Length: 114
Image (cartoon, rainbow, N blue to C red; front, side, top):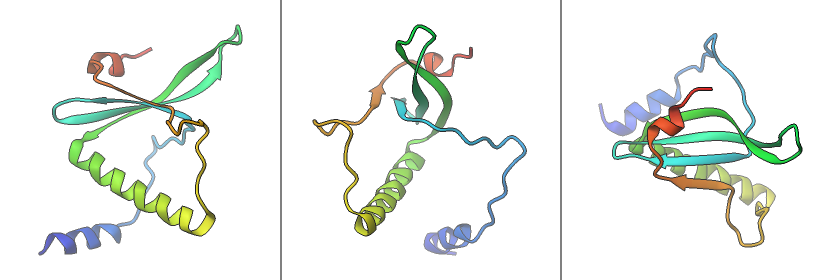
């Protein structure tokens, strides 16, 4: 069976939510890249008790670099389709940068538990 056929068959697979499924909102992401994988910490910027903003980490997703590249392609296609239908998505920042931090932080920092 050709690779193309396997991908097509996978797209027909049903999506079943596990008992531990959660939905989160994140407005910030911190990315760390290792030799074999990439980790993304999704955070929400929100005020602390004293009113100063802080990153509240919500979830971490780790994946192979190959999977991350496929995800980038899928996101690019989805966003391009959205913009074709709805017009350009404007950036919050005037300089066009996103609120994403790319680091080569040790995995221990990303994997620490509260």
